[in-house]
Amino acid sequence: QDPEHGRRDHADQDDDSPDDAADGHGIHDEAPSFDEIPLLDKYDGEDEPGNPRFNSAVTYLDEAEREDLRLNVDEDGLLRWSNGDLFDTTHARSAHGGDGRAIFVMDTRGEVYASTYQEVGKFHHSSILGGKPVGAAGELSATDGKLHLISNNSGHYQPSRESTVNFAVHLFKNRGAVFDKENLKIMYSRDSK
Image (spheres, rainbow, N blue to C red):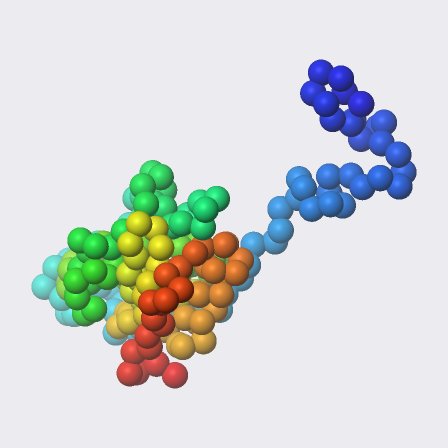
């Protein structure tokens, strides 16, 4: 045993005592993988000036800009922005869902990003991952880091009901997020299967 740090060195370990890898410490589980949902073809080139879809170019974020929109789950199960602030959509507004809703995407590795800003022709779900495929997309509503609404409302990706359920399971079961148990709503757009 290392007397200074109170731990055993692997060389000093008994053969039948578990090492860090065997008991789950020190190893990283393989990242989850979610089915790709591509951007609908009609939005190809939307980030280019003069595109036929919008009068202006839709903003596509790069990796550094996207990091500001990352949501993490803290040790209490609350959603937090990458800067540590609690995720709260009280003053958010999505173009289609209205007041109190933020747009979100989950990439195919299970990382979640959200924006309390959305403006038609300028900033959409596609903006967050730069037009790349997503694992889920829609809207979130939360107060003080606790979710009370998830929807799959995204015209750019039109995710399935299944992808929305997979997102919810990932967030609550795999990442440990808490939610408003009495008021949680999962809503599906009319067009989803």
